[in-house]
Amino acid sequence: MPNDEGSTTKDGDVFECWSMISAIAAITSDLRIGSLVSPTTFRHPTVLANIAATIDQISHGRLTLGIGAGWQVNEHLAYGVDLLEGKDRVDRFEEAIQIITSMLRNDRTTFDGKHFSITDAPCQPRPIQSPLPLMVGTGGPRMSKITAKYANEWNTWGNVPTATERVETFARACEVVNRDWNDIHKSVQAMFFLVDDQETIEKIRKVAPSDRSIIGSNEHIIDQIGQLIALGFHEIIVPDFTLGKDSQSRIDAYEKIRTEILVHF
Image (cartoon, rainbow, N blue to C red; front, side, top):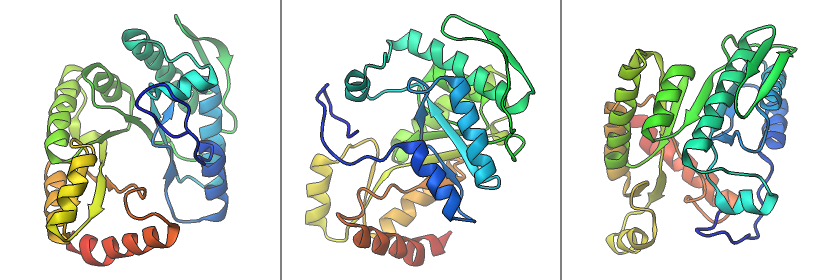
């Protein structure tokens, strides 16, 4: 459901993530697919592991399983799902990622924790990919340590200044858990606004989140993407919701990005 800064339930069409991913997996052959990211609050980790394994089979090995601890307050309130507060939420996530990791890689999993307890749990059929890429979306210190310890991929939000801070946090986390920074695939997403005139740029700056927006001409966006790559990111994710009000406008914007911006990299 659409987010709200408070706890208000808002109207708006939002397709259920894993139903849509399964459909996309069935009708495509080359695209990588995945969740960005699926909160471990809404699905028991054993269920999520089996969903991921099934869709990896359907897609012939094209899934990236993106997970997070959960954050959207109004969604959890509306659906009666306990978000938990800070430490407890991260504790629950750490248990969940251990269960998911084990189930995707081992024949049976037994786990006894504060939040989850499972016994001799199977995941059959197994994923085609070995290992199936496990991505965690985060920017905080403790979640970064958990990511560095268990995940294959790390994702974060941010424009260049914000992403720089988060890279530093994640690099420290890798050192703490003795994980090679170069072994982890790193991706970043931002809200891209393709705008040429200065007046419109200033208007957007007044309302767009300052920590995760990249606003400007092709030349400016090329420069910003170049800086993100220099920070060590392997993948730049461009959401479509800032690229136009209808599907054709968004398709046109993606084509512009492909032909006028990505050709420089």
